[in-house]
Amino acid sequence: MLFSKEEYQQRLSKVKKMMKEKGIELLISHDTNNMNYLTGYDAWSFYYAQCVIIHADADEPICFVREQDAGGAYIKTYLKKENIIVYDEHYIHTWPKHPYDYLVKIIKDNKWDKLSIGLEMDAHYFTMNYFKSKTFVIF
Image 1 (cartoon, rainbow, N blue to C red):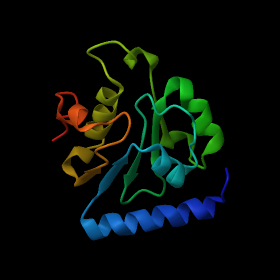
Image 2 (tube, one colour; image 1 turned 180 degrees about the vertical axis):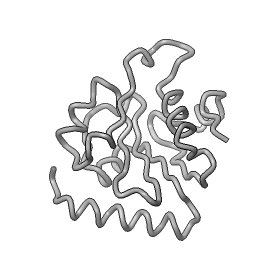
Image 3 (cartoon, one colour; image 1 turned 30 degrees about the vertical axis):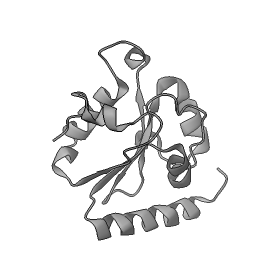
Image 4 (tube, helix red, strand yellow; image 1 turned 135 degrees about the horizontal axis):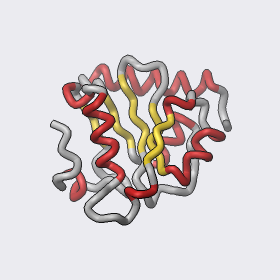
């Protein structure tokens, strides 16, 4: 890690404060810079689906990454292993499957779909077009 765990916790606290001010209970951040800022994850894998999920009541964010890239998350972040969620390679280039199908399942399984969710809408692998597709329907 480039910074101490305390530094990342301070960053997370700042984000959670802003989430509270905006009424956001779950934040999904796809931008690689924000993922790095919040977790230390810095793999060169932005061309596939990946994100950080920040729950207002959780101690740590969740890092959602491709199986092939999980090693970087285990090594470069301060996160506990259970907070690194890995999606299987069978989601890659197998239409109509998409990695965010699994993300939506996680959100629904945890009943987070009932929360006020904030999304970055213009990250490299998460565009407005994808949001409008049938796959990312969580509400």
